[in-house]
Amino acid sequence: MEDLNGQLRELWGLVADVWQTGIFGYDVGHFLSALAIFLFFYLLRGLFTRFVFSFVDRWVADTETKVDDYLHDALADPLKATFIIVGVFFALDYLDLEGTAADLARNAVQSLIAFTIFWALHNAITPLSLLLRELERVLTSEMVDWLVTSVRWGVIIVGAATILQIWGIQVAPIIAGLGLFGVAVALGAQDLFKNLIGGISILIEKRYRRGDWILAEGVVEGTVENIGFRSTTVRRFDKAPVYVPNQKLSDAAVTNFTKMTHRRIYWKIGLEYRSTLEQLKEVRNGIEAYIKASDEFAQPPEVSLFVRIDAFNDSSIDIMIYCFTKTTNWGEWLEIKERFAYAIKEIVEGAGTGFAFPSQSVYVEMLPGSDPTEGPEGA
Image 1: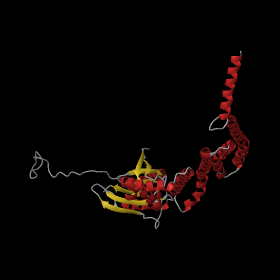
Image 2: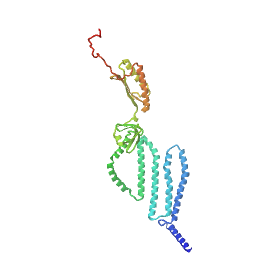
Image 3: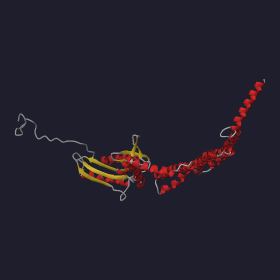
Image 4: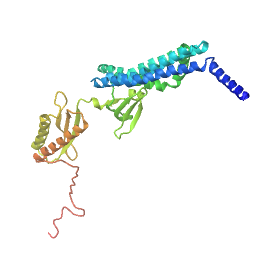
């Protein structure tokens, strides 16, 4: 029995020794107390989220503007993280670390603070971009997107440099090394920089924007979906996306059909050669009168308008029709053309003539084997 009591006292001594020695010379009680402090602020974070943020959510939902909604979404998580930082700070402060451990603890807290600040700044760029949309009066929406993306990367780079500096890592030598590395990379990535410069020139010149219908001969035709740093995404009319390097589009002749002020109709109508002079005049004047009387067509001097007898073709007398519609919408333009075609057919038929079609006339002077000097058979 005495041996058992002695063994128990020895075991308890070992437990007490571990409890008092702990980790890094600090007893376990200190660490448990520090953990309790951290858990207290973690629970406080949950209460703050549950009550305060629920009130803010209702208040933001009642406002008409969307800026506060985006700002709330951007800053909600960083604000929650501040309770974690405060908890870590007071827990480490309670431990009263010394020497290297104290330096590591201080750097860790400073890093968390820096990370949270730049996290909030990065998220705040989204509501800030809504305010930058006012710049679209001067800049294009694509240039504003580029500006927002550049600001985002700037915040990330500055935040990373700040954290590195906290840990005693000098940023200047790294930048110098990256500069030398960048020169080497630039020699092998000239196309990348050419495409970047091409994209900048496209935005500055405002050649096209998202949603524009463009045609680059030999390159692509379709609707612009995105103008990136390296390439432009164009959705063809068969719905297949094409990723075109910006350099190609900056060097090529690009037709922007979306910027048309009017849409052209250019036809040549062939009438039969049996048409009389009065019938030709009636058809020409009738077509011209229809165009001038319609509100769907643009009128001179804003645009050119021609309805003229144009040529004596092999099988027809051609009338050239050259006019412009007010709308540039393709579907509306097709409807106007259809109605115009119906009207032309009525005008031509009303004048008593008809449309020509390719034909050939064969003239026979004599039949094979016949003698024009002889009379009819049996004469």
